[in-house]
Structures are given as C-alpha cells and as structure tokens.
Image: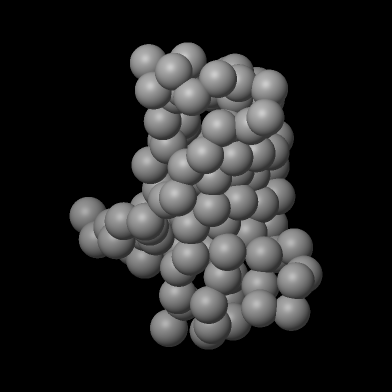
Length: 100
C-alpha cells in the first residue's frame, strides 16, 4: 500500500488542559495515492470536523466524525498544496500535503 504520512501539528483547544491531551488524544493522517483518499486515524477523539482546504481557502472535502477511529476523505483532483484541518472539543490539528 502506498501511503505518505501527513505531518500533523496538534494543539489543544482552550477548554482542554495540556495534561489531559497528553494522556490520550492523537491523530495520524496519510495521503493514499492507490485509493485516491486521505486517511485520518483518530485516537481518543469523540467528535471532530475534518476538512481539506485548498490554497484559495476553499473547502474541497469535509466530514464530521462521531467517535469513529478511522475516516477517509477524497483526495483532491487538482494538483497543489492543501491544508488538512481537524477540529474538536479536545484538540485542533493541521497538516499540509501536496497532490501532484
């Protein structure tokens, strides 16, 4: 399987103490060229909004999780650099990836 990791910058929201975040919540994300998807793995995240944003600040794909540990979004068709945003009560995370 051909997966490239997206480097995720993870922070807590203002409502969640840093200590609580360090005990569980985590996110991993991958560009999967074989399937044409962006795979997101969520650990200890109850509900999250996940979106892909292009360089013109347009939302390309979006989903809301409800406790799922694994979600897939469609990889953008247009080559370019994109921002992956994951936002929940527990955390906020961003990652940048490129589609060639």
